[in-house]
Image (tube, rainbow, N blue to C red; front, side, top):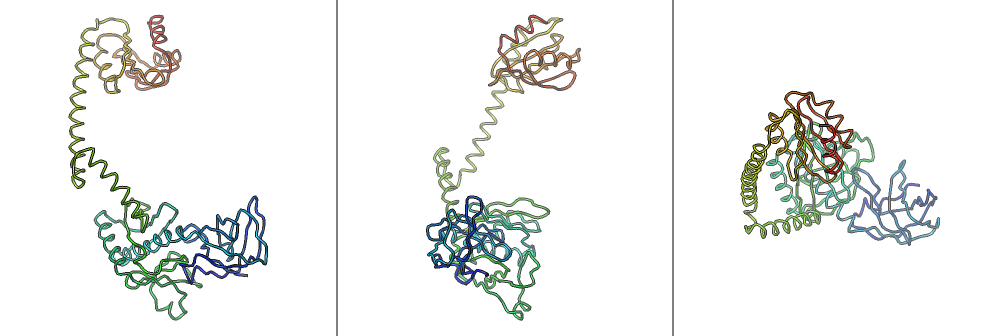
Length: 383
């Protein structure tokens, strides 16, 4: 017995009566069929509705071999009639975003000739894949056209066309459907084969925001938010902008320029600090007495660039120089030499000091997990 799909004729129906036609135990849960349902099963890139049937929580709904199954936490009596309710806020959110996707896909198809080749609507993310490239300017234009379609408050019609109607109707479809085709039509914007519930008018979508796009299989993937999701996104970004504005003492429409100035100042200070650090290192190098042996220097707060500069400029004063700088688990090191192949030396040092690293014959770098005293002991005993 095929379940009557109430969601196809009334997408706003959230409470309904239904009779249980089968109930099977499946692992720790139950697989239930009804004579009619307003629960939309997962499909077409959209997750399913959730809710209750009597006292049973419906956490999953799937259409399998043409039958709709409701997965619940407790069993229900076959032949019994129950009052059921879907989580309508969740349903309406998905309808806003799915209907918004139809508008965007219709506009892109009409304006650019691209096809929607992938769609995913979860509880938090909406993505649409298209088989052509779009720029940020294109997205901005599409977004304006999409929101104008919302303001027009056009009726969204969902119906099964007759054979003759279908022959004379141009519509989008990712699948080569031959029968049971249900069309969702937004006059002047889009007509698409779709099994999902939609809002009644475009005005109920509220707003459409195209967030970003990225290259995907020769085309683009668009990330978008509609309705309450778009509003929540705006509120979150507005609050962040307001906080940044206060921190930078800049008007909200000037915070990008203020951040650019801040980053430029940071780069200037970083350049100045690097120069001062090099001066300190130069003084340490000048104070070091040249030797035919090896030099081990243990310092702190040295950056990787500092260590490399230190080693490159110290190596002329000795046979081998090793610069150590403290990290969370021990020390980072850089070892350099102009006259010795460092591979054997590096292996011996790493074995002795619980280290790891590698590099070229004249320079190796890595880290050791040991204490300062162990480094000093290793060098005093061997070098």
